[in-house]
Length: 182
Ligand SMILES: Cc1cc2nc3c(=O)[nH]c(=O)nc-3n(C[C@H](O)[C@H](O)[C@H](O)COP(=O)(O)O)c2cc1C
Image (cartoon, rainbow, N blue to C red; front, top):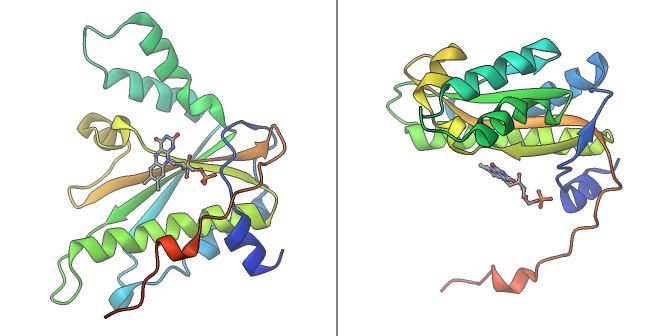
């Protein structure tokens, strides 16, 4: 796929089924992630893949983070969340102390890496959607996933085969967002 085609037409695919991306496709996904712009080449990111049985374990970890008074339907829904795609990639920003690169820039770089995965997925015909929600910001989940104190989850990327045809995105009017200064 042409680069501009991927950039202009990427859309999320919320309903994902088997098969998961192949090993070869995954290599492309992660190589694209690793081309994110990165001030001082800090590589402020890492990625966890979650698939198969591990998705059930992730659901259990999610459910363990819910409050004691959580409704049974919410627990059931939470347990099933990671089953919404055959492959999940947890994108983790790893912020280091640096005299010239503030934390915000490092988190942005990790966000660009996540976007690289989405674009490379779209270009390969793989469906993907970026999700977060409160379980991306939960200390128990972070601990269960083995995050260090300087790490934070910035994305749960759900990846697989789109169940339905992808929608055609409608172009936003550029002039609403772009102005010449002064
Ligand atoms: C940081 C971030 C977090 C997001 N979290 C969620 C989420 O938890 N649930 C959700 O439905 N969409 C979430 N989205 C939005 C979707 O990934 C998607 O971009 C949005 O639905 C628009 O669809 P499109 O990508 O096809 O334009 C998030 C996007 C970003 C950048």
